[in-house]
Structures are given as C-alpha cells and as structure tokens.
Image 1 (spheres, helix red, strand yellow):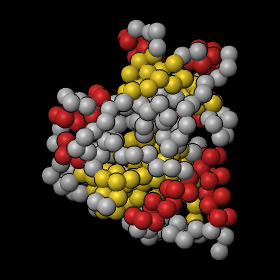
Image 2 (image 1 turned 135 degrees about the horizontal axis):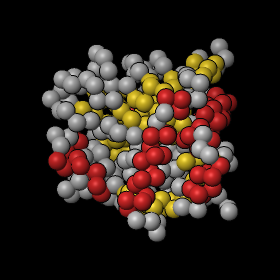
Image 3 (image 1 turned 90 degrees about the horizontal axis):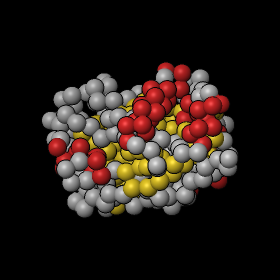
Length: 280
Ligand code: SIN
C-alpha cells in the first residue's frame, strides 16, 4: 500500500494514511519529513507505538530537547507526560502557544501520541502561521520584519507563575528550568525558506525597544488575526492518533472541555536551531 497524503483542512495540516510509524522505511520517513516541511502539521490515525518507538521516531527528525517543564514518563526522561486527571480542572496547553519559543534554539517539532482519551472533547486546535503571515498587509509585514519579539515562560511555569496557582501544579517537573529568549517577529523558516509570523500568545512577552502596552496592542491584533477560522483546524484525538507539528510555523491549543475525565498524551520535542529574520 502506498502512503496517501490528504489535506486535513484547506490551510491547516495533512493526514497521512497507509503507513506504520512503528516500522518506517527510510523512504517513508522522507515522505513524512517532506510533508512536515511543506505543511507544518501532519496527522496519523490507527498507530500503535510504544514509548521506545516514539523516541526512535523522534530521533529520525533530530535530537530530543531535554524536558525541563513537565513530569516525564518513568524510564523515559525525554517523554513529557501531558495529562489531566479526573479531578483536575486546569489543563496543559489550554491557550494558543508554540512549544519552546522561550529557548534560544527553539524546538523544531513536537510529536504527540494519544494514550488515554476522554469519552468526548479534548481536541487540539492548530493554526498555520505561514498562512497568517501571508494574510497580513505588505505594510504590516514590513513593520514586523524589523521587530525582535521577547519570549519567556516564567509567568507560566516559574515560582508564583500561572501553574503554581492551579490544581495542575503536580504535573510540573520537580526542578522546572525557566528560560527567556529573543527572536525576530518574522522568521525565515530554516528549511522551507518561507516567511512566518513567529509570536505566540502563551510565550511572547513583549517587543525589544517597545513599551509593553504598545507591544501588546499589536500582539493582541496578531493573536486575533492568527486564530481566524481560515488559518486553523481542530484535531479530534482517537486511540492510535499521533500529531507531528513544526513549532516554527504553527500554534496549538488544547481544548479543556472534558471535566471529570482523564486525558493523557505523551510528547517528545525535537531540537531546532537559532532562528533568523528577514534581511531588510
Ligand atoms: C501541548 O500543548 O503540547 C499539548 C497539546 C495537547 O495536549 O493537546
């Protein structure tokens, strides 16, 4: 059976069928990698991969980022457990964000594997930041190209940060390592060479040389813009579902609409390189 790639929604993601991620040939991996670069978001159904096979799949893309924020799967320090128990009300990733934009070398990709799902709800929304960039006016594209955005995560994961005050604090790693970084607001994607809007609501905390209120006036406009229906899609998890997304050109948002039920996914994050902006 040959692999089949079909659009998931007009501007957001593709589904790849007729492939077994537990036993990939080199050729199949190249097709997946190509789809990942082209679309930034690939979905798979009906897979059955062990934590070890999850890790081996990730290593085909590149090296794995040390998980510094969430508790890891016992025996697998590279696998972050993204979970919410029946009695917890807060979830991980419940707002638009890009994984690890607060690192100097932001993550290339994340691979999320469904392990335990609620009877309904718990979908993940994604947004395509190539399309969001393309939808901006040439004037705003040009202005943004001269801006460096500041990213951080202490407001979420640090002492006194958002998670500290929630019922999800026990999902954080024992020694959370917070970080902060600066990246161009418009990056040139290192592999596709296309321009991308690279700010996100979860982790962008301002613009270099701008007052905070000025920066947030523009950032809030960009968050509204990037989350328009035309740039987004929603993936309903099923047993055996896997999503691989490119953190350099997507946002994602985990719906928290399954109170009273458990949801567990395993995430591996793959290392990227420092990001470059547009030469003006
Ligand atoms: C994440 O934000 O990486 C987790 C997304 C999800 O749980 O759907």
